[in-house]
Image 1 (cartoon, rainbow, N blue to C red):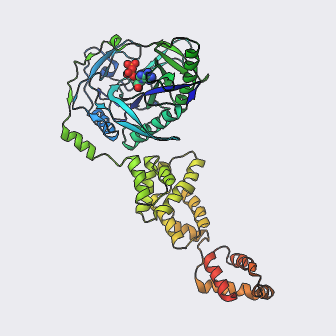
Image 2: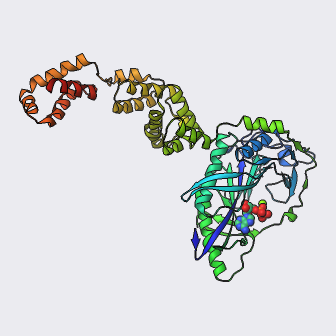
Image 3: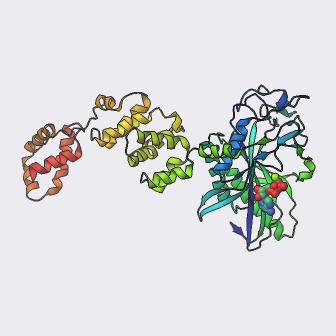
Length: 479
Ligand code: ADP
Ligand code: MG
């Protein structure tokens, strides 16, 4: 992405909301969309004298994400207070990490239209969410919901390695896929489980030094992230060209207008008066515990995709589709484990199954057909008991009647393919006996008439004849 000889330099700060059972420093849980102010406690409300306790699940999630991204895991972790006032933060400070983030370094590997690229990571640290200010429900007042206060977050800070919206999109997609594979977050951007702030500056192509960056907040979809980047890039280039100074400021994205506007001039770290959190003991991780976490990581999307290609012989395209989300990959594995050949299972899942789900805007975990039943249906095709097109009809019925056996449905629908030679030969003979002229024409060279005979065989067998067997039998009689 260049424009008038300029390029964008972009770094992302991504907040991942963890789906731990309890909050970061308090015992209550959190569910999106619950009645306001019902998931709170003295700790998350910051009542005087309430004391936080660190949730071990957060440390574990941070470690596992860091290991999956090739970060160095810090053994000695302190918590820090970041002090500021805002109505959604009754404590007056956020418990975060400042100088000792749990993960350093590492990278996110992305695919772009220009090829693969590694995006460096600066750090990942543990912190907590704030409550929510609701400005658009009451015409006169701001409403406050503290359910979200104290929900654990991991903040993932990238190096300024991204250059355009496409790369930012790919980066976010990788992170979302990874947190879902690791089962540490649902990664749902609409519900705020994944949030992203964009830092962006511009510089003439070829210059090393970075320009002054602007931070854009309030981005709640991948598309908004791309739009905000496109808008800011154009705006900053125009400003620089006009000889204006770019200020280090925080801007907000207006989804309706597709533009950004100034929110505030950026605070310095100094303004937050960070200091070590006195109410929480530091967490010390041992190398053997960290190693244990590394050993117990699940198979990650990239490795799974490569395995599907090298071990199962799938195309890169199929392997990509199947590993996009963990549930689909797990379903595919289960269909194969139940005996279906990999390539056929892949075709079914990326074809009829995906089509069925798309039509209903549903997802694979809600598919009413079990992996075992699909494997059984595939087995019927492999055994030539039903034709491929009959199998598609049977699949539709299986989805309507969960638990129904594919074989029983095939019988009930009269879709069992007739491949018994004796039975089919009787049909073939009756057809040929009724068309003596055509048989003579065929034998004097009009070989195309085989289509006519086949059509008649299919009609008389009410569509159940195995086409391959029927053709063979016709040829045997005629040639
Ligand atoms: P701050 O102290 O303002 O939060 P950081 O150094 O922590 O700034 O960086 C925050 C984010 O901004 C990181 O993702 C980083 O990669 C990115 N960033 C830093 N400098 C620039 C720049 N000049 N242009 C674009 N992004 C930048
Ligand atoms: Mg920062």
